[in-house]
Length: 475
Image (tube, rainbow, N blue to C red; front, side, top):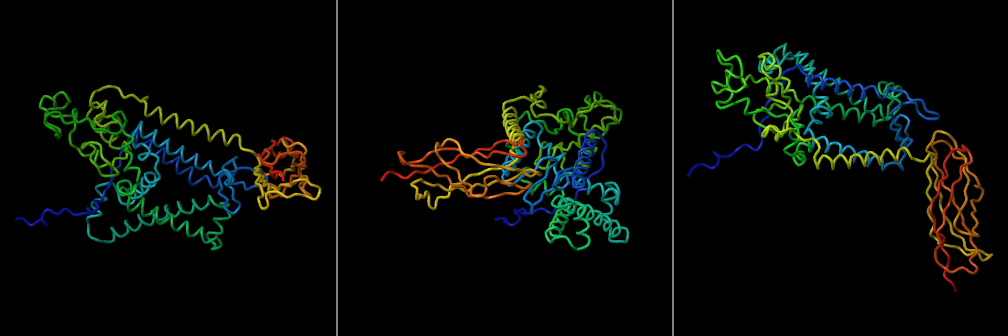
């Protein structure tokens, strides 16, 4: 009987270091463009001014103390939290839509992990050299060159990570003042804690873990396959063209064209390995679609570069669907699943845009005070009590008055608050008493409305709230 322990396979595999090689091409250029745009927006947005009356002039500011989010000309209040739910829904269905059409294209071009890892790899390449130099440096014994280059690499990584963490903090306070307070030790503790946490996580995720995040930590990589179908466009290797009948072969003597290679049974793949060397997750796309592939297209650029140098047709590795690769048919972008994602996405976007466009400049709620639910006054009238909440969502003061409708003979008593002045960004609670002569009326409930009538500014809309008046049952 053989020893069963000899058949055991390690539960965990040691990480194989990846040293991506640089590549030039159209998809690499697109990635650089997206990266420049993303970094420009992220790092510069806190410093962009936006003129507001009686409010901070920072274009994007998440004011937790004031319970307001300033997004250019839009001010988001706690009552508008449902907008966040709508925004998250839009992001989710946009991700589903994009994945259904073009696979993990988001991962390859727009994911924060990809964007920051690209910069960290670029820093590593500048300091340590191209792929062969970095491999050689990793394998050589510790000496002054290795210590200096690795130390400089990690210092630059930490600087980028710190800039990332500090910039995130600037979105939550006035940027200029917060930076001054931060470096003079006067900033609040959460600012230092947040900056330290994001510095550490950025350094680890983009500098140390890298492709491990995409392969093992990201949940999207695990459930993305349910959104794929045979017509989903992704990076694919044309095996029939690349390997023909005898598989991959180096350049053959005398065979200078694809036709001449085909006569020997060789395909167009010359097994140069360039596509593997440029892959940021270290896979070989020639082995077919894989979980680790983020659809960044760098292997397409690498293969096209080789094909161009040989003056052979491009497209050995390309963005294509499995159906087009197998049958040669053109990929259908418009199909039921994609249409369904698009319709839901449009509805969600339309709903959010409509809600934002029609937001009221002030907020009204009316709640009945139910202890007691009614009071019988000395003159025989029945009184119900209500709590009215008003919130001025603008940066200007407003003057408001009140009236009721739909309850004939009723009197609205606001005490000394026949009109109220509501300061910019402030909220107010008022007690309202509604009195009604119950003579000749049956008991039960009466539905009516409380109106808030703006006095100044005169262009404010009138707000209404439904209310219920309780009458006691007859004796």
